[in-house]
Length: 165
Image (cartoon, rainbow, N blue to C red; front, side, top):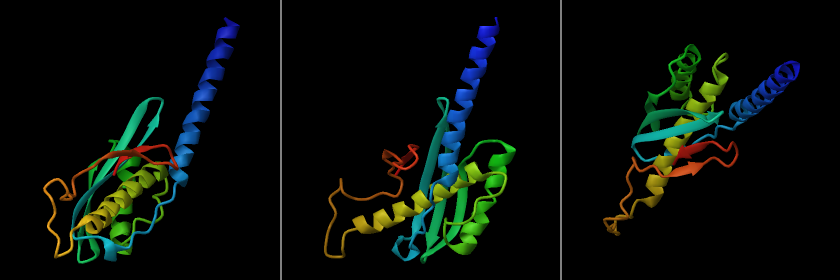
């Protein structure tokens, strides 16, 4: 019986260390500044997912950009916990600073960083859309027309977290 307890404790400690390592990656991942002059006007959806023990936590936002300014950010998907709701306090700071590169909310760092990365990714879509837009002399083919809501799946190389671009 004593061996079973020791084995359980060792497994529990290993799982705890693995969870801490994943959370640390999310907390320390960089949030990049976005040149809003490069973002086309529109509404863009961005998401960020990280996982612990086979459970994925996905955060989704919609970011409105008008005249090279972030005008609104809506949280489409967030967990229903106190920390998750506290993390949403980063949104007014993003709008005020016009950048997703703001400090995370103390006490909700991991979720704050997840929301900030989702905001960053939504803005990157506006840049990609602008870069893929035809010049005034070009006519796009039906299968080449960019859409703000197209979201192919990818993996963040730095954190290993999956997301949709």
